[in-house]
Image 1 (cartoon, rainbow, N blue to C red):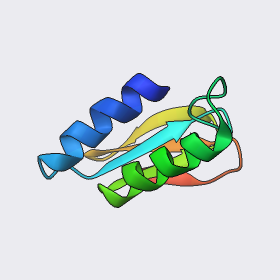
Image 2: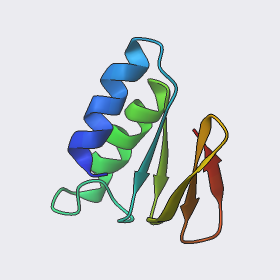
Image 3: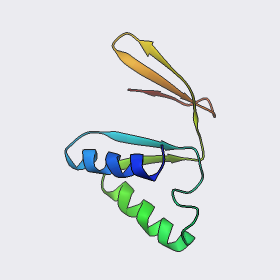
Image 4: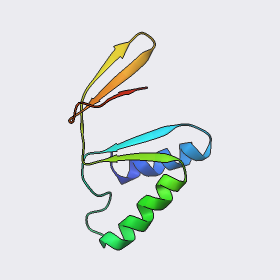
Length: 79
């Protein structure tokens, strides 16, 4: 997801939903000064959203009642 998905995740997190946002790029907003992005990312994390940057997903598969998302680095997330 990009910055819009992260914004939606932050809103849902405020409603009590656990959110992990996978961002393929190493920065949410590459067109904004890095010091501003750093503060923004800290605030998003503080609000309860877990940001996984620089690592796109490679697959999603169903396992029982859950979904397993596999990232490029081999990490698997159970949803």
